[in-house]
Amino acid sequence: MTEHSWKELAAPYALGALDRVERAEFERHLETCAECRADVQSFHEVAGQLGQSVTPTAPPRELRERVLREARQVRPLPVRRFVVLPWAAAAAVVLAILGGLGYWRATNEASTLRSSLATAEAERDSTRQVLAAVLDSTVATADLAATGKAPSMRLYWNRGRNIVVVATFDLPPAAAGRTYQLWAIRKGRAPVSIGVFNSSPTGRAVLTLHMPPGVQPEASAVTEEPAYGSPQPTQQPFLVGTW
Amino acid sequence: MAAGDERALGELYDRHGSTVYALARAIVGERADTEEVVADTFGQAWRTAGQFDPARGSVTAWLTTITRTRALDLVRARGRRARVLERAAQESDAGFAAPLATGDAPDRDVERQEARQLVAHSLADLPEAQRRVIELAYFGGLTHSEIAAELNEPLGTVKTRLRAGMEKLRDALASRASRVAEP
Image (cartoon, rainbow over all chains, first blue to last red; front, side, top):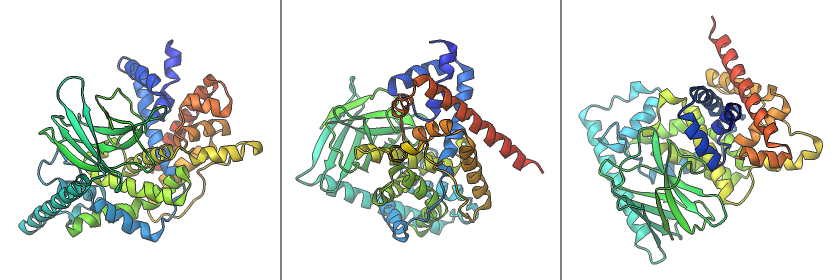
């Protein structure tokens, strides 16, 4: 490919409009081409703003309650930068995002205790949800393995509740700014994301995700993706298994 | 969960819910699916808040990126086409569809409203052919080859339009942003 034709790929790359093979080839080219890297970065910034071009629309009132209720059922991923109290740490980041530094002065003893209690309660709720999903006669399982020995993963899919319980073993946390993404693989169709996750420094992760409605995967796979996940896998999966 | 934690998520929702909702709606179209995407987006934002890095972009960019990904996932999972493609099909006889992004909806956050209008106007100012390919990629989730097939145009033409359109957007956003920054 000539230099000129590489240059043509920077815009579609930043918009996620390359197919998997083109994407992989272009990423190899990016490693050696500072000019294309600069193009990609500036186009990425543009693409990041396109979503806010739509005219804001007030959501239905009842949606707010649903968002808060569903968020309450999941435990934020452990934040590696703050090893203690993952839930409280995630909340701290959200608060910092909001610029509400004034009201996150939760360093006194009482609030630390409240946070510990909240974390314990969240862990208990999460454990209950995991147990309820797994201890069900209709649950389907899939074992995902890498070609070598470690890491591995076991999935429990409770079809009735549409919940997928993920348990990983010997999986080191994803690199900085990256995340793991679990995919539903179906014959002759594009992979569908089940969700993103990360593992703890001990290589373990136990969490619940939701199977997208109507998806009946034949297999599942895990890739490492840029933070927040990708619309489609950008690399070969390193863990695969069939349902 | 401690009251403060839930308040943080509530505030995030109150600030960005209408943008997330509008973007989800622009991609999936149907109301129940839109709500599904919004709930999913804030769920993922909540779970992965610790990975948010302010140095890499704004909260809006972070949330809209998640929204777009989840919305396109849902469209694909349903075996359907994104709304922008349905619109394109319906309006193909009448030439290009009107821009997806227009309008000056009021926003209490003046700075954010300006940023939004800047992007919306820059997109609307593009030549139609360039705007179309960018919308099909961003809101439709199509690859450039799929866009070429959709529009019945050579792939080379689509690539050129994508690049030219993105360059114009980049320049428009940079020049207007610097004008705003001047005293």
